[in-house]
Image (cartoon, rainbow, N blue to C red; front, top):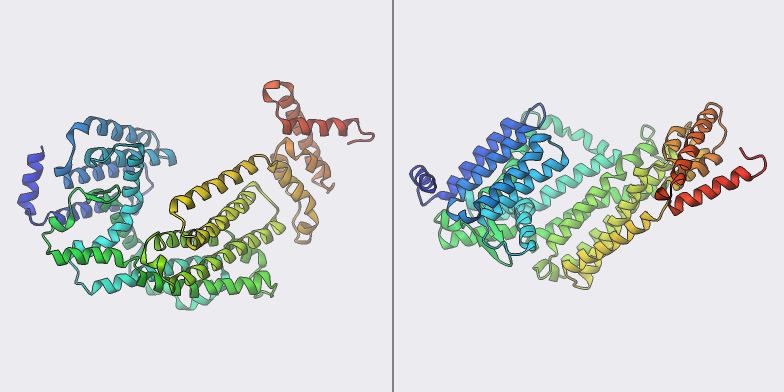
Length: 502
């Protein structure tokens, strides 16, 4: 079978240009993805067909590096990954199908799978590093002229800057209004931009499987692209330089200058309208201003943190630059301010529309993001490793989750919503008694404090009886005993024995 594949490749492509052969395979698989997913009626078995085609394309492009001794194990893992998706495509089966694909390809082509960490590193190379590496390899694949490297230096600042502008417009109605006269939608209406983006994303996902590069401490190329394309030594050096240019000191400096200017706009607007209580335009309410940015700005902070980790990796020229470091600190400070603004936005929204489990979770998530940004600053200031950063984030996340496990959120949410009914009433909103009852027995103390509003009283009375009965069932068996339930039962018993208790 291998000889047939080799003859096919040599006959139609030639031994001197197998890199172009790989490009052709990637384009064919991307075309299949376009047919399966673009303008489709949903996804299901189409994902299975795409993964099978991607597996075949990867093996065809890397036939010389296959380890046939591991073929049985790779086949079992690949088929096992397909079975859940064939049964039903959901989040878990989607995860398993790509885990099976990545592991099976790694088993067949990566000679360095010795420890569990090697397996995780192989998946990282395919799923995370691979798509980013594809951008840097575009020049080598299409043999672009050397001056193109100057454009690449601006690629990250402009591309990521455009993403930030889009997120700020989605998060801030004032920025959205300022950008409205540009009418960008009309300018790009003649192009199917969505389809172009689909092809770009598809190729970024597909290419790492077609042109495999496994890393341990150094790059280990299964089929080195410089040798494949028979480029000169200078040409190979230019390709490596292009990969570096996307995140070298010059590109990072341009990025940080642009990002600091962009982030200053929403920061100043929040200081004026959110923290300074300046009156918004008549057609924009504080609820709309607060809600639209509460979650979107967290995405910008996460992107910013990821960029800083990549740009300021230990030992890089950017990390040692005295010009870049202050810009990084300034940008991270602006991100911390935006996270604080997100907390304030959510607080304003909660005051108007009450508290829920998900809004409590959002507060906790924002706290973790702020801690993560602070830890990034400490890592840069004290020249710590990324392992230190990961460890500190794990410690802070574990401690936060542990503390959350000890908090009675049902009682806290119910107590907050009942206590803040006057604020809600001023905004023509009433207590959400249905949600209060849905919180469960732990909300009974809050229900007992709820104001007796006509129309709500009977529903709360009926709901209280149901929750009391549920609490009795919980306490009826020692197997379901819990200290929190025990404390609640003591509260209920004390209320029942109190004179004239309701």
